[in-house]
Image (cartoon, rainbow over all chains, first blue to last red; front, side):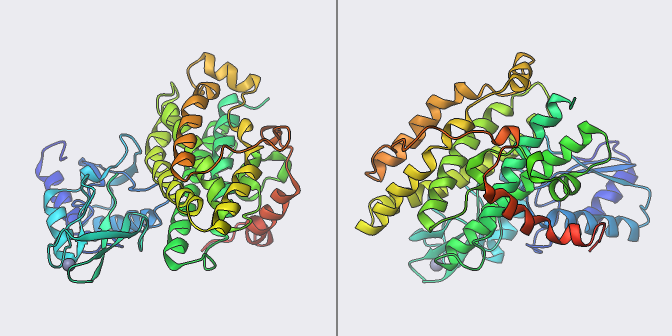
Length: 151
Length: 251
Ligand SMILES: [Zn+2]
């Protein structure tokens, strides 16, 4: 992800690793996999969903963090291709999601409950509180939970 | 004479914009909270796709119109969306029937468009196809559920599918402009998408034990030429009211 390879890029990458996603603040924009490239003069990001209302908020948050760290001259470029998929979420990000109570995206038909780990769960609604999540329910502990949709 | 790629991006964007606006009318009034959330999110995806396609259209046109300008400051006869998407929501069955038919069409269309020789069209389509696949699955579940639900839900779903069927042929029709773009591998061969569409629709109808839709009359067309039903004007009045009353207002 870090191109150019110098110390400046590494410092920019560290700044980005501290920028939270506005809807799932336990994840950084790097964990979420929307930072495509970090160069000395340009950061490249990609949106999650076409209509994700957080897209502009994310860009603004990155801008603010870069400015605050003295990288006012670093441009932010948005690219669509290749499209973001849940495969871009880092392993670290998946662990953080689970700990936060959101079942991470998997191709499996069923999601284990992030609270009690039971596999006796069912989908309640294909869309949950945000475009990226579905609403599930655990039959063992009876708690509802969000599941990150797999795309 | 408009650039044919401008026109093409515009009509794809108009389809998504008008349907997104229609579906968003359910926000706060859907039968259950879960359905309300689902429809609002479907609408959001569609508005996002519209923003990208209309933004590209404006970029190709090069006259300083961005996605908002194209969405809010064109009159009804400049819209080139298909007639299906501007039809009123009707009851829940009719909304779901339209969503299923249109999302199923869009899934095939975006899938093919993701191989377009115009890389900017291909990039948006590759992103959007995953979203509309999810919409088609969501609506398909409801088709089955209402189809093999109560006598009332089944009857309403049969009527809803019959009602929308007259608008299906337009989705697969191409004019000379699109055929010229097809020669350059930019546009999608819409006719080639029809067999897969019919198969996907047939499979869901069979799962819901629903009969094939009947053609109550001749197919209705004209949206691509700006010939719309009266419903689009009313929809645009709602959509465009604020930006036209307060031009250039910013949040
Ligand atoms: Zn549980």
